[in-house]
Length: 408
Image (cartoon, rainbow, N blue to C red; front, side, top):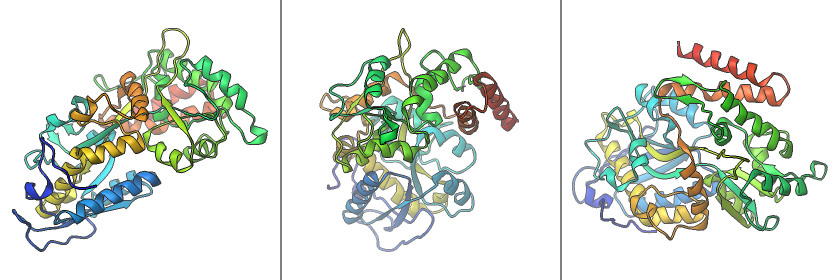
């Protein structure tokens, strides 16, 4: 797909974009038609296979139609790589991840403020997306999609999406047969995926306005217990991402709770899938999953290398405002647009509509740096309860103690 111009931004050539690699290789040489040398940059990501292929195709298009070279590179452990390489000045110019690292990474000096150099007005994006890419007045990324988890169902097993967890349970009961490799549900149980139910009854993980934990609150514990009672009995024993994903992709479960990033693999496996908002528990409770904004971060390795910075900006501006790219991402992967023109459209694909309804119920992940210390202890506590090694209240009280000790 070609480099298309929108009303809100210019193509890379018109922007006078310059470039060099964000860290691993730098090539600066011939002049562009406007100003500055051409260049190459690396974009680190941790995408699923189908999304990876789409990004690589987008990078090839950008490279073929500009004076720059965009080089996506898959990283197995993006957090480990970014936190070790960037401080050493060896990181890529950009990386692709959700907005939840913004505060921590900016305060640690890993990100570069590109506010004064951007050729795109942030008003082209939705308000939550504008807020996600900024911290303490600095613009450290550009956004391209919102995401959260929703309910994915196999149409060969399920006629229509269940509106309540009770309706969902009836279907899970019908198909759950572990001895024959069949399960009622595919659902990775990490802190992000579980947030919908932890928040459903009035609980919370972390209140960033007051820097306060809520893991041991009664309402939060009710949410964790809800998962243990209603979902764990219908899942494969190993609740890690890959084992859970596999049972749905192999056609061995009617439901998956997962996100837009999963759709490429679903389609690659010829699963006829429907997407809907998460079902409601009984009573007034509603699932409130954490929502995130996917964005292209500018790293501190760009500072002092304007060629690299300009090339990275050119790609980020193009990728996040190119309606052809964004529409294809919505159609193929269920990415929820944060470009205002597309976000307001009534013609969003069915997959996007389903995830969009979950986003509308959800709450953004806090960007406060202390949030980063919550995930690990939370998951350790839940797993200890799930495995029968601890009681719910005691496990999460201990988790809060561990988190606070990390804050001191």
